[in-house]
Image 1 (cartoon, rainbow, N blue to C red):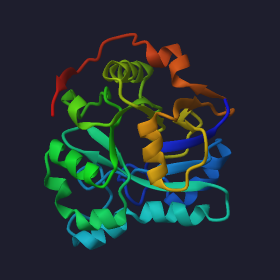
Image 2: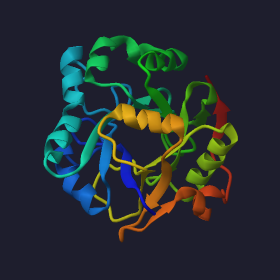
Image 3: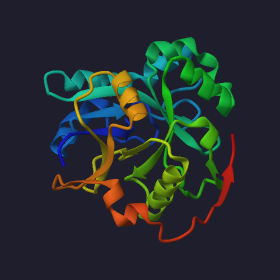
Image 4: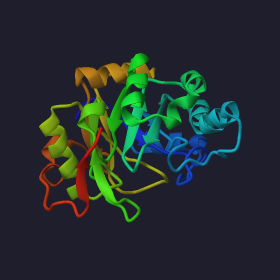
Length: 254
């Protein structure tokens, strides 16, 4: 398939407690895997974040953004695009927020205390978007599956870190809502497994370009193999046709 492959969901060890790779070390690996760029989306302060929560807000934000900055600096001169996003957690339901930056975080310290609908409204004030990540993810630490059709702008329908049936359930959910669909790897460390991302018709240098492409439904959620084969998620039966129901209770919340 023709286009430019972008990782849209990634974690660094600087910003995410579960991250194993420094932002400065990702670029060469991602290029080798066939990506043109990546969006760093570390866990924010209300998730599995690596940042010391006792620090003043300004220092916390600087630490949080350090993984992105290292990746950005490492990409200079390498024909690779590094963009900024965040992964925001509420009660186990998480969202990829694209279109905000470090300055916005510094000016919105109260965001970590807001309910979902207020965060959604605040994000929209700056023309950003919220994508529900891995909506049907099941983990031992989760009590249920929370779906939030009223406060998301799209659905991550393929997350390479989750089982096929969970992705297929997410795909069917996205089709039902009629919202834009995205894909990503949710990468925390180097991997030889298939990865996910968005196949875009042209390169993007600013996160606002990606936001607009989501709204215009220009990108194709895709899977890329170790050998570099890229396939649209919609063409992969195991990622679109659920083989089982979820084990956890599904709740619709707002």
